[in-house]
Length: 303
Image 1 (spheres, one colour):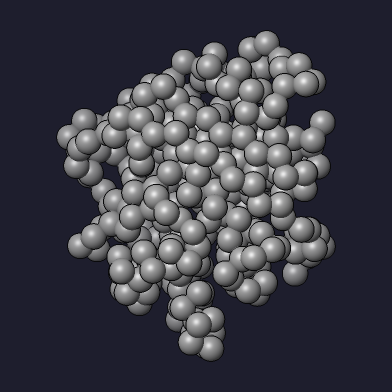
Image 2: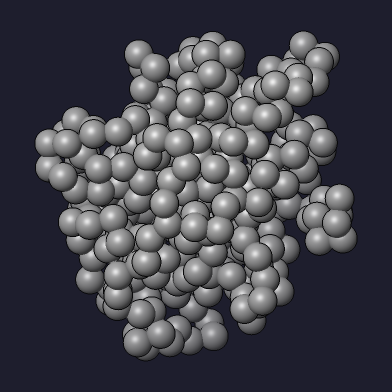
């Protein structure tokens, strides 16, 4: 492992609860089960109101107050949730837009959960991933390949396997998609932050250090045209470890755009999870997620 990853593994995580706020659920069928088939194309984000255009928070403001002030000024299509945790300071912040859904379709961010489940099952049985499983896992995370995901979904036991692992991970508000529709798994930003803590936390994680490092490595090697989303919050010159999800509802033709991962903000390691739905275009949804992620990173930064 490189020096940066070693630094992450030496860090002690302070677990702090992040409250998710529920709103009106969005209905509708889906055109796709997760990401596009095979390798997914990248997209340029549409302009969204910048957080820097809003009044700055005072030094005494809490991270939640800082984030709320910033995001209250953002005009957004649809709805979203965000949750963030500074692994170095323990600072947390969360925000729910006024019309936010109770839960969101995961789309392809569930692929991190599927891999975590596969590794947990291997740990429990005293085995390691086969060469074939490692190849499939690489394609699933780095390229967002759906065929590889379908295979691994079957190997973990589908919905029942994912739900069982999520009980161990503490994801109380995440429910696996049924009938093979893993992309329709329902989740919240709060639960996705908990999953990121399972992947990145030094204390109390159900995953071994080797399993954590394996997922982190793959999330750090996502193909270039998929490196949008929470990466917008990262310090200049640093890289992000992330997984994104995007799909369009067939009933409304509106987009669900999600992004989860670890970034460096003002030198600190920060976990950010954003879930959203209702954007008129894919690029508009990506632009919103990036604006929200940037605000969340700034809110929990140490400086």
